[in-house]
Amino acid sequence: MKPVTVTSATYAAVVLGTFGTVAALCCMASAGEMGLQPVQDWIQVRNPKQLPPKIPCERIALGRKGDYKPCIAKLPSGELLVVAFDASHRPVDGGIREDMLLWRSRDGGRTWSKRQVLPLLGREPYFSVLGDGTLLITTHFLKQDVRNKEGYVYSLLHRSTDGGRTWHSMKIGWEDVPGAAKKATIVTSRNVLELRDGTVILGVAASKGVAYLWRSRDRGRTWDKSLACRFAGVDTNRLWWPIMGETVFWEARNGDLLGLFRTKSCSRRSPARRFRKRSWISTNGWSSSVHIMAAATGGWKSWAATTARCIRRFCVCGTADY
Image 1 (cartoon, rainbow, N blue to C red):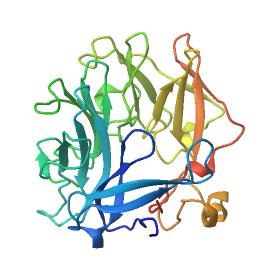
Image 2: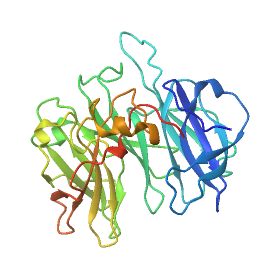
Image 3: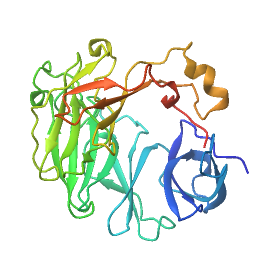
């Protein structure tokens, strides 16, 4: 059996691996498979180091055509949650409406609840789970959405302390970002990271190099928004996207803060395109490169690249083979 090929018409799927302990991987599967029973399949591992080249798995379909960009999280109770959003873009009152979606599993991902529409705003939801089980979702909210009354793209942080049953939402607009132009696009990091000392961090940015690292000491309830960041060797004024947008943070063992930053768009002549025949990277959509950058432990204000050049293999170009 061949690996599932991801297409632009997609819905959420969960893949249960059977290598070592059972693990759940959330990905996208072709819409033509929707409605099928769980499928015995395998996950192909590219350039394996410690994993085997193939991992047996069971593919379980969720959702419907147009459900997009799923993210999976495990609560301290063991319950699994999948969040995604409806990107079918059916016309609504001269615009679109992108509903946020949720599924739950209490048996390791073998069975799932019905598709639930959450009363939350924003697209491309991304889970972060703190040590006490606090659940956070980052999103940004398109101005084309008929529920957006502000007329520009802003972000939201949704927070739940009861496993996603009730939520408190915080708007992050241009007024919250000193130096941002009026109604400038405001984006955040993908994840909210809890550091070993208990500090919780969130990246927030606008265009033209305006970037901040927000910090919380009460698990995301309130935030210190004052820490402006600098990025050595990166001309943030020329970026097509605010630099903190879609960043993923990680705390190294030595306490340094690492970030994967989306930076320069890949061109048709980029190494990513030449690399596509021997990787999972496909090339029929927008793409961007990634810099790995590190901030020293003494305040996290200054960032410097840890690699000599951007890493093309992290490109996400619209579709992929699993």
